[in-house]
Picture 1: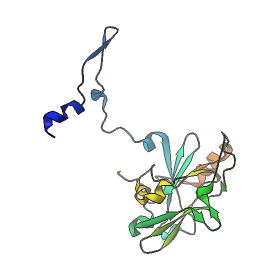
Picture 2: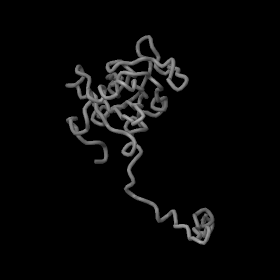
Picture 3: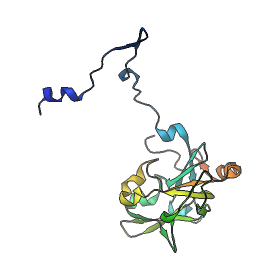
Picture 4: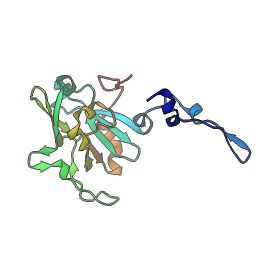
Length: 192
């Protein structure tokens, strides 16, 4: 295809007037440093299980104002250095991917504790790491996409393992047990 054949595929902006006023261009509204969805709507917290603290296995908890928590591995997790081979939601006799919820109150969701295992991550050297619940609440869903594409785990927001919803009255106590970005030894997120 030549350049002239492609001209029809590109946006040709034409000035528009509505009720006598010229509508500004949407192209002019582009903001190159616009904050990500995570930056705009979530607060980052970190969780380290006491047993795993020396093994460098921190978790990232993205806490939304509506109390939904996305649980994922922190960028500093040792599994990223070793290379992640697979993710499994089969934890002992329980398959977390079979979790079924319904309704506004998410009835039927599995109850998880901060130290509950949500998934198992296997690395290229065959070492296996537990993905912890990090917060007490109901398991709303697991992210099946990370099973097919383990590369998603390194993407903040998209690479979540599970969605957990704590009770409203427990949110402040849960936040108090987690570390803020400033308190976390890594202290920075990817891209900073």
